[in-house]
Image 1 (cartoon, rainbow, N blue to C red):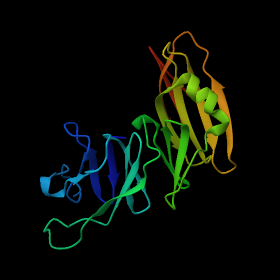
Image 2 (image 1 turned 90 degrees about the vertical axis):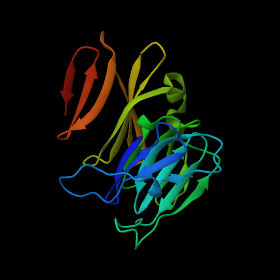
Image 3 (image 1 turned 180 degrees about the horizontal axis):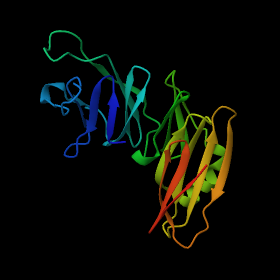
Length: 212
C-alpha cells in the first residue's frame, strides 16, 4: 500500500517524489496525523521509485520495483529528544514489488507481486519465489486488483485480471504451502475483493456479493 499504520505512526509514500517516505508524528487518539519534513526518509541510491510499504515485525519495509529496503527504530518522539530511525538498509537489489495492491502482511512475512511472480519476504528478510506453481497463471493475468489476508484460515488471496478484464482468484495456504485457483466466470467482471467479518466479499461492476 501507499499508506501504512505501524509503530504508532502513519507512513506515506510521497505523491510528488516516490523516493520519499513520510512518517507522521506519534499518533494521538482523537487527533489527525501530523507530518513534519524533519521526519522524512529518502531512498537516495534507488534507480526506481518507491511502489509500496509494509510492516514486518519492528521494521518498515520500503518496496521499489526492483529492490527492497527497510527502516528500523522507533523514531524520535514529539520533542525530538529521544529515539531515531535507522536506515534505509538494502535487503535486495534483485527483486521488488510491482503493484502495491498485491502486498499481503501475514505472520509468515510479507507477500507481494514481483516481476517474477508472487514472492515472499520472510521475517529473516529472505526473499523467496513462493508463486512458482502458479507463475503461468500470474503471467497470463498480469494485473493485481486486490488482495487480503485471512488469518483464521492462514491464507493470502489475490484477485488477478487480464487486459480484457477476465479475472481469477489465487489463494495461498501458507501454513501448508498449497495453492488453489478460483474461477470467476460471470457476466459482470470482478473489480474488488476483501475480507469482512471473516467472509470474502467481492465487488462486481454493479453489485457486491459475500461468501463464507
